[in-house]
Image (cartoon, rainbow, N blue to C red; front, top):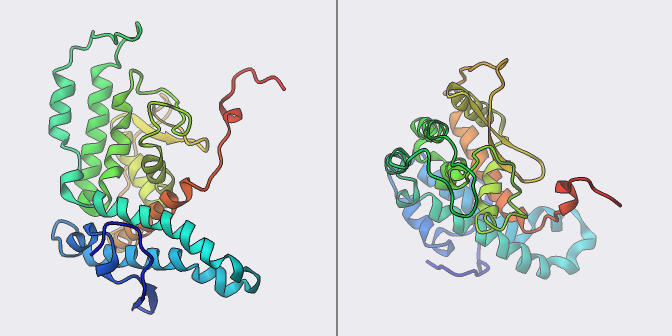
Length: 275
């Protein structure tokens, strides 16, 4: 097993697709593959093995484009490094000790006086009821999905608790407070557009009078439902659950990899822009 980036010297086949051997994966995946806390631990490990093999080797790019052969080594080094970082991150985030202790978080919020003000300004802390409602949303999501989504899924939706204003619109990419978590949280939010999962998230949050919004500018905030909106119930069909969550996992690995390759501009967020 290894904990540092290396390009696999050999590949194996999993269901007819190239895959990095489990022993060449980040060490966390051996534990995940043998774990009992997830519904499909070996399948998730296989997805990570195939993802790493395909992104380290450029199987589609170099098979389908004959004029790209000279880029292969650079691709394997650059894209391979990003793919390794993605599978390393999610291997850790599927370990049970990294999931939030929701009851402890709830106790912390309940014990905080609602009238407390931040010393850095004169902004009142968000109402306790709003904060508790957000914790209830995440608790209901955990009750539904358990350990079949990575820990960062839940931490992403808890993140507004770190702000004075739960409803603040703030760019992950340009917020100094969020830079350390931008890549992992933005991957979850982009990956969350897997349709059935998105409906489930909206359904659960709507029970508590909220929806969680993510804009194209990589900003994330909690937004209250307007008075004309109403709660709705949705459950991922039993026959679709496994494929939906597998698709989500594959998507967030891709988004984690791609975050480092995407450009961003402050022009998106500028007020009263003059050119």
